[in-house]
Image 1 (cartoon, rainbow, N blue to C red):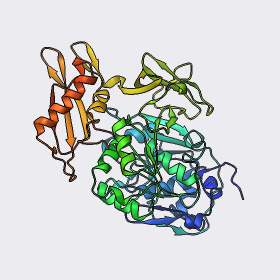
Image 2 (spheres, helix red, strand yellow):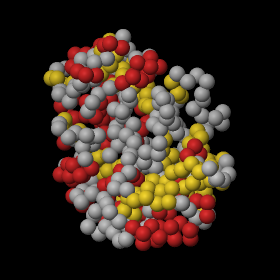
Image 3 (cartoon, one colour):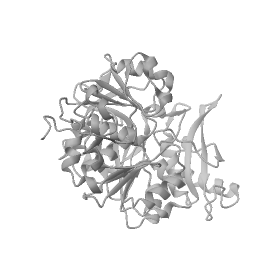
Image 4 (cartoon, rainbow, N blue to C red):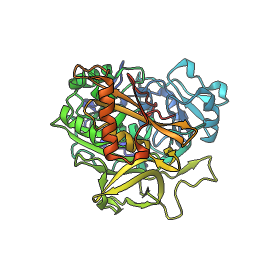
Length: 465
């Protein structure tokens, strides 16, 4: 019998044969058909009907199963990212009006927070005939990333989160998706939904797994479609096992995709479709670029067939979309969108030859003697050097100019080492020469330091703090 509400479980069931589709993590694998005759939440599932449920699990697989089962049942699902500090959980739970918790680890027992805790949601399926008749249009609440203090809580619906069509033009059980992202963040959740609604399987990553182990496992699982941030992919390209993966489709999002990372991916995976997309937790998915070039065509500005409209105001990309979030929770004095419906992404762009290029974040500017420098713009130039794999540009305090531009660079030799392949002084001179040729003088790094690696945030972006 069809549910009253077109829940995620309904859509999964109509997307294809469940018996050949799976969700897997580093240590467990579940076939979707197992949910026809069982539940990861057992007899507690019905108790969660109409409640605001805080999903805080250690493993992504437990979270994935809970999301599938709770949509249409719960009034609200709160997707707790794994890096949310323990001290912030009580406030986040209060803002989200939490009734119950789903967790998979005894150390995460939330009973002490004053809320009723559920049975632990594990990857183990409890046999039984469980009622999944939908009764609610469930709210999906995500945490933003990159903020100081408690991240903002953003309310979506399943409709605003779901892709409008198959991103790759393909669907079916022969597809196996994977992502470097955590599915409790917007970028990972998009891939989770694309896999489920496209009739495909999904291989989940783990924060405790090395890049090499993840790539090896993804390759062994037959992954055909995979996504991550440019930083994820730069780290993957430095791995000696990168070619154990043979994807047909590669997707980049979450950060500016410069030409160097796109070209390097094309070299390693010449047969794959390589796409970079722009999306944010608040604005949703805005567009995809499939031509292998950094930036996006100026023709995308305005109203698109998908109903997304974009404009540039004060150099910042603004988006009005049916995929935008509904509102911030607990932020009654802060509107998510302007009165005209546009969300200010605060991503700055610059028009060059009928193409817009991302140059950085509005709040990430380095002020050099009153002149603005966007770190990402300088990094894109540094990354052009064939011996550079990653770079991080930042400001260093100066008593004369207020700040100086400095750069940390990861270089790679032909043998895959992270040491400069030639005399460091020669490589440094070559990088600076390129910067001087392309950039204004105040944007050229005052110093370059070679480092073995660069830190990334839990969301997969370069850690800039």
